[in-house]
Length: 252
Ligand SMILES: C[S@@+](CC[C@H](N)C(=O)[O-])C[C@H]1O[C@@H](n2cnc3c(N)ncnc32)[C@H](O)[C@@H]1O
Image (tube, rainbow, N blue to C red; front, side, top):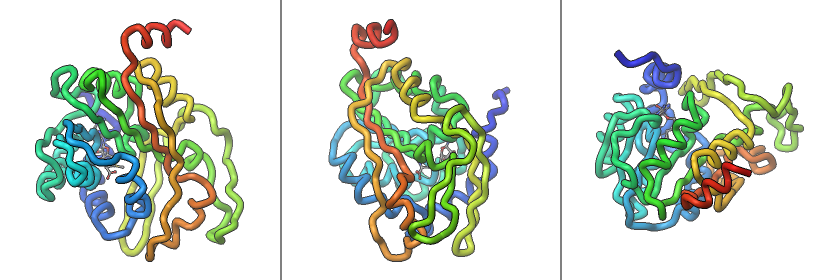
């Protein structure tokens, strides 16, 4: 029998909530960053894997950019929703720590707002490294590590952003967001940027690019104004280190 997993259990419970939340036009922050995201990934024709695809919206963007996309998630209902929306070319229900693919299968791996949700980031990155071609690229979007450790003191555009407790250490987060008649129960682990960077190094990746995107000014997204002052997301690109580079990085 499968061992119980907090991440899979949580997302199985909220799968229907997430599908409604993510598919409601311009409802969440994704839409205010979508154009910048598409420009940052840019067109390509290789084999792309998305881990934690949810209902499939990021896979649909990759497909529109020309990639041959495999969409995966640990929750069967979400993979079903992605498939129903024709989000990719292939689908698999798979935990990101144990992917059903051969070594060196993919040119691009997309981990969009999923590493905060997985229980074991180092094991997930090692598994991503295994299925990536040596010339491949990993794209990561995180809810910015600062975001979970503080909040704005009011909804005023210039309200101070106040840090609660410490930025450092790994902490469980859990909270319910409600807007326009929809509700979403988020839960995961927040960790400082250094934890992700160290896990990437250990798994044999080098960060090649980093962005702190700001939201565009789309209509209906006024609630995101404050996130033009403090970053809400962090985007990284990383490439596999060559064997000799990886040995050097892990001995320093
Ligand atoms: C915040 S949603 C993001 C979905 C999609 N990437 C998007 O941005 O629309 C996080 C997703 O990660 C998935 N997930 C959580 N833990 C996972 C794991 N260990 N392996 C694979 N997927 C996982 C969840 O089921 C959920 O679909």
